[in-house]
Length: 140
Image 1 (spheres, helix red, strand yellow):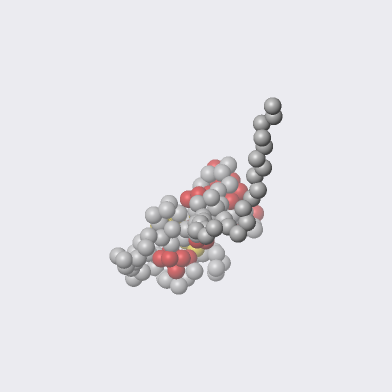
Image 2 (cartoon, rainbow, N blue to C red; image 1 turned 90 degrees about the horizontal axis):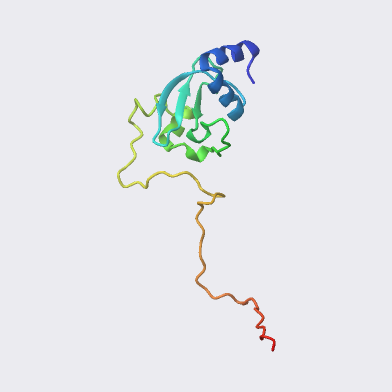
């Protein structure tokens, strides 16, 4: 959690709507410069005046609404931005093109496990047991 003066500065720098959205989603207020946006709409920020380990962060596109409790998770971050967020790369992918995705690579998608869009296998073998359905004769 941030100190009171830092929170007040964040309120005036972000504006009321963004301030309360950040408090709702991440429980803290962070102000920084926008470094870039990925193809999913996630925004990446940096503020070198923060303490080490808190200098880079992400604003997920799915949590951009105040009333929406959309689930945001780490699998929504593409590989090139993951390297920048975790300080494996010094320059963001918008300026440093060293992280080149090959043409033959599969399009990046988030991990959908546990969601309605998760992959579900199907079975081609016959079941060993068949559920019994009673056959009722009509009464005369």
